[in-house]
Image (cartoon, rainbow, N blue to C red; front, top):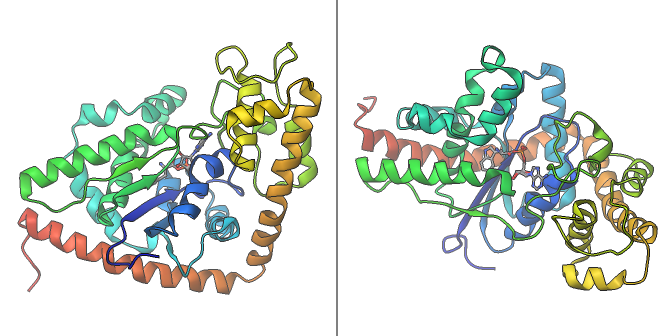
Length: 338
Ligand code: TYM
């Protein structure tokens, strides 16, 4: 393992909006978080402030924030290797977000496709301003830690681009202050689709949960969902995203979990029907998730242990974040407090 001082830094975040993360979160992003902590100086946060944009119930938010930390540890985030913390525990996130808001064009923020999609669904009167500024807070999360890389799914590409633009804009206006990060987005697995609607991404906010594989669901439920995945009327297990979206999505999942290439995964099912294929996918997914669920449940039995991990994480995160914030204030010409 390289020395902390010479290792590149990664930062990423996940929202505590639900009781469970889903397989898309895991394969698109979290799996890379685990791998990168071996080679990088890793900062991972549960972005509870971002979750406020959906107006969560306070009791649920608190429970889900802790459940998120438990799941992250259960999938393999090691608090001895990674700095694991809760976004609201480090006030510099909001402080830098304001500064970044003052550098972001109104039209620029309005062009963010996630904002456009969500606000189009609920209408402007029911869309909160926090949803509009969401990507700017995300940029602050990343820039504060001088992150080199940001492991995320494909849907976050535009937000990383905005982060880069804001970092570069600040640096050229006020002098070199921020590292310009790059997205760490996989070629395969960066977009896992809904099992019942295989041309749309698997999402916590899907109207029906029947196509969403939750990490914390019972094995029987996930088994049933995968065996009932929407496919086409043909017979061959072939990767063809355009004509066989359901089968291709299942092949992506199978290959990401087993570590086989898509071609090798496909070869395994030559001459076999969709039924055998779906059973095989269901078995590898369920076998993989069962110990993760058990570990997360075990961790949740001891909330004091989890909160102490998060307290240590916040302390480490705060050291890095407050240094960047102080440099930013200085560069901007804000008068130092005597
Ligand atoms: P969130 O909680 O919506 O998603 C967490 C991560 O899961 C990825 N993801 C997917 N990947 C593949 N297939 C899918 N179906 C799928 N659904 C979700 C997301 O791309 C994400 O990486 N805006 C961020 C949260 C955030 C953040 C940050 C990320 C806030 N601050 C700073 C990185 C750095 C988000 O989408 O969270």
